[in-house]
Image (cartoon, rainbow, N blue to C red; front, side):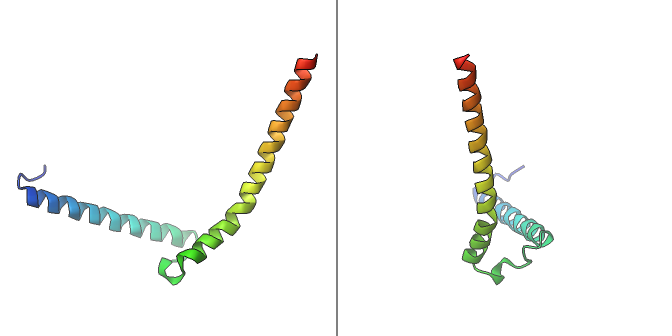
Length: 85
């Protein structure tokens, strides 16, 4: 239960938010480390991380887009074939 004192309640909420953020940061750092992304995110710039992510993501996105386009064309072709009969 939160205390009746507004200042104490505010301090408690702020401390709780800080503790949760710190725990989340530690958890994410461990997760990145287990994924071999690096133990210290400060070693590289955000731009370097974003560039790596982009280079890994774009080919996969292109593959998914091409598969989706093929599936849509096939569906349209099949629908047109059904309508013409």
